[in-house]
Each structure stands twice: as structure tokens, then as C-alpha cells.
Amino acid sequence: MKVFMYKNIVVKVKKGDITEEDCEAIVNPANSMMIMGGGVAGAIKRKGGKIIEEEARRYAPVPVGEAIVTGAGVLKAKYVIHAPTMEKPAMPITVKHVIKAAQAVFKVACSRGFSCIAFPALGAGVGGVPVKESVKAILRVLKEMDLSRCSIREIRLIAWREKDYVEMVNACKEQLEVYS
Image: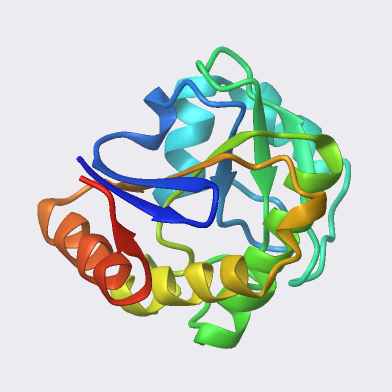
């Protein structure tokens, strides 16, 4: 694990399974229809229970640029923030979609008073956005936020694969202060 700082926010980069994170909310890079078939969404549904998808589907369609919060079923996290990066399942996207999704995540996390959220690389699976570019976009959104009114104190960037972990760390090294 590598730890970085941005102002008063700790940014941890970890290799692991986002469904095992014990923070307030984990982020699902969703599609607008809230169909949780594969990738991170599929893993969240398999481990947390179908109830997560059932709750999320009640809000569909959710446009890219908005996010919803559901319970997290039996996961360690309390909530799942579903932020669409694409309209339909498995469609290619751009970094602009990642930026809109990240903005929506931070907006809803701050409005709900969350202090710790865990992100995968948004849009880096079937969306086709390189992991490093995804993380740079997430960090760009963080740096553009008015943090004076935000409760977030810790952000976790979770990589499933070693090569993605390395890309996440490299993105953070370019954008943030290394803490440890």
C-alpha cells in the first residue's frame, strides 16, 4: 500500500478486492440501467447480494454525471455509490465520462457526509480507459472540489491486478504528495 496526501485528505492506493473494503462507501462504475453484470459491478453483486442491484435498478435510468447510493448488502462497506460511466452495459467510453462520474461520486459522498470512500479505476474495464488516465481524472476532480464543505478524509484507490496497482501509484506520484 502507498499513501499520499492532498490537503487534509489521505489517499491510499491498495492492491486488493474492493468488495472487502470496510469504509463507508465503495464506488460502482455503473451503466445507466444499473445492470450489474460483469467487472466491478458483477463482483459487488456476487459478494454483496442481488439486493444491491434490485435497489439500484429502482433508480434507472441514471444518466452519466449523476450518482445514486444504495445499501451494500452483506459487504463490509455500508453503502455503494453507483456512478454511471456509460449509458449501456459494456460500451467504450472516454476520460470525459470518468470525470463526470467522479464529480457525481464526490458530490453525493459530500452531501451524505461520508468520510471514507473506495474507488476502482472508473471506466478501465470494458469502458477501455487506461487505469492511469482514470486515476488522473479522479484526482483532477478531487483537486477542483471545494473541500471546505466536504466530509471526505480518506480516499482509497483499489486495484485488482498488480499492473493496475502500479499505474494507480504512478498517477498519484504525478498528482499528489507522497506520504509513505
